[in-house]
Length: 258
Ligand code: NI
Image (cartoon, rainbow, N blue to C red):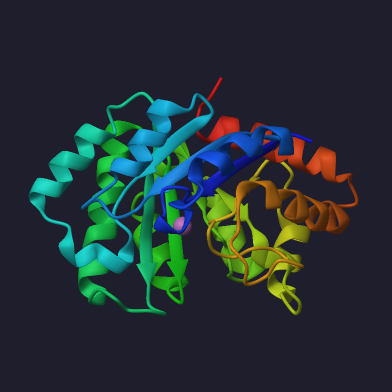
């Protein structure tokens, strides 16, 4: 099996105690590529450091909806400069989060829209975080449809209906599947996996969060994608190796690697 974790936060402080040792072990667990997502632009140094130090690490940077209120004009300039770096392959994660509502909704919408424009200007794919806000997110995304179809993107940890998934595909996006696919009673996830075409999905952890069953609640890491691949493969009637391999290739295409 070869694993591409398209959405990890190895830069998170929860990996401070054993980050190096963990990374050293990943290769023997079939993890060959990782995109580390630095989603608070006030400090993405750890993500940059990982991409510089390890050949198999790439990075994404952007302002998460949680901290959208701290995004100002200077930060937009800084973001544009970061996106020039060769190992920064996407802008994200960005979007709307009306579940936690940590930044005012009007600010979330404005900052989301502004960052979509920056991604378009740079010709880069986007990583999208949407929670309890799929309708308004799709409205904003539709306004950027032309660039999205051209540059691509991924709906990370998708939790919407099949109907929303269909709309995402029409916008040129891929669907990201992670640990939540393995959770009991996640009917919607299973339905979305049944529906998604084989050339339009990727695997991700969102680690340290969202560890798959039977590790739910523990600290997640990229090697656990093997369990997501197993579940996805079962739904699709293919082998876990095939699922991981297709996801790997889709991820390479999404982030234009290799
Ligand atoms: Ni994330």
